Length: 409
Image (cartoon, rainbow, N blue to C red; front, side, top):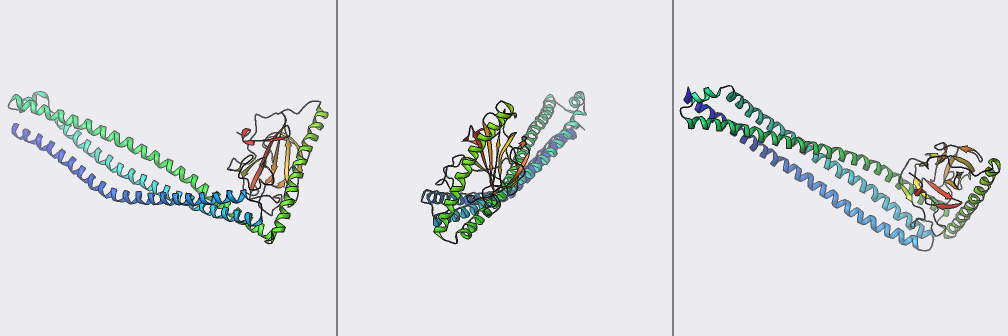
């Protein structure tokens, strides 16, 4: 009996480590197979990155050409060249966004693959721990006296105790490996969720770029249709647009003064600002032209006194703060706009309005719908100087235009 037991213990432990070695070898084979697939995914990802770099280089070329033409004298040929370059750049923007989407998709595939591989490793390690625990339970079922009696010498007894200590160490080591696998898996799952969020953002960007491309193409068609490829007609339209802009500026300044004087006469005191601050007049979006933007396409006619906020044609416009409507000008196909006078010397102007909901002298509250956005060339309210759907948004302090971004949250 003693001899049989002494033989069983080494055989069990040997079988355990052989099984562990077998699992390890299987893991190596799986890793080799996985590495081949991962290598291909990594190659595809690098190809996408290289393509994105080439697209960015091409975009930089178009940007330089656009700035060069904008710095030259205003002419029909220059304007058409600018539009052509903007169309080409917008098409590249779409390709860039789509390539980024493809790259992110590959990154997601890679993380999914690594998660599956880690799951397999966790399963193998669990089986390994279970085998070690089973062997330990077999040893723990015998008393110390029984183990001592089954061994012929003290050396045999000490060796047996050593076997048990080795098994316990093996369990501890396996548990640490399992904990690390679990931690790695959680990190990979977090990376996967981040990649999915990045992908959603890229899809939104792609749709936005498609809108930009359509706007640029329509703008080019509109310019050609209006000018009939005549430089003289183009210069006439520029002069008319400049005149309309100057008239709008004069009206805005005078009507704001008139409204404040009227309100002061009625109440005997200046209008107070009764809101916590401004809100975005349209859903917060990309600012496509900044205040006094050096790249503004019509800067040779006037300094851009506003920010242009990307907004789809027909988006709802909301009052940035409570106040009185000083003017709600519907100019048909010309430049339509709304001005609201607020307290603390502030006023806001909403330009390229396609539809107006409010009337002059009407009191509006913050967030109230006051009209619909526009800006699509040739549509109601767009006027002559427009590059596509957006909201022209001004903030004025004591009659002077200031940067709206310093007042928006």
